[in-house]
Length: 297
View 1 (cartoon, helix red, strand yellow):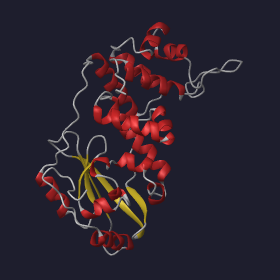
View 2 (tube, one colour; view 1 turned 180 degrees about the vertical axis):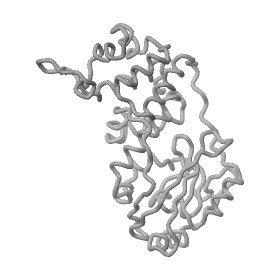
View 3 (cartoon, one colour; view 1 turned 135 degrees about the vertical axis):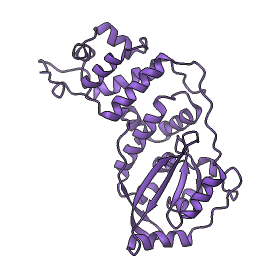
View 4 (cartoon, one colour; view 1 turned 90 degrees about the horizontal axis):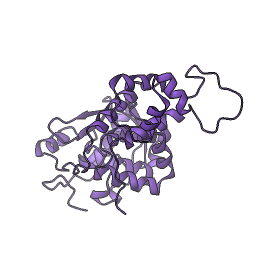
């Protein structure tokens, strides 16, 4: 089945509906009237009134029929729906995309990793490090960077995606004691990235697969949380080296199509560092082809 195509205002409408249902009347300063509310959160007319727009106009926004809300309307809706800074920024991006919508989905970005970036990964040993695409495909790694995600080598190279690993690999829940919070943050980041590229094949294929195979993913995806800060540390319960808590850092790589480099560190002389060093020493070396893929799989 071909991925569902979006019109200009579809993603904007979807985001507004999701945030409206998660905004309580009490938090918006309203006193709920008598009787049972048929839907959770605010009603459309309440959002319209609080934002200072007509009910018909807001209804058109939620139905994807209105695609050019002014910056003032966008900001008013953000205040009404009590969006945080990340969510407010995402709403602005969705509105801008709706206004300039092009019917043809863009091609997926290149998966090629430049040779000097792969050299950087090697020089970062024994610290685990890897490069991922905008949709969290694992593109390049050093030995500990791959070994840190226990069992990921069981999958073919083209299937190695960190979101897919978190939701579908049987080892993930054991590897991460804080799995629940970790997957919420993962989906929020993926939602934010996919929101302004909803028809891009790298996003639609991954989201379609995870929605079908993981009820946890489908539930979190429907919430439409975006953004959120990553925790500076992450604890692993690794089957080879035991518990280790590592500091994490992720950065965008200039001149790449949305690629990011992530690395983990530990203070030398600590048990966490020793475990990290052991992981690097016992991991199989990364045998990379020119396009950055492990040639053994």
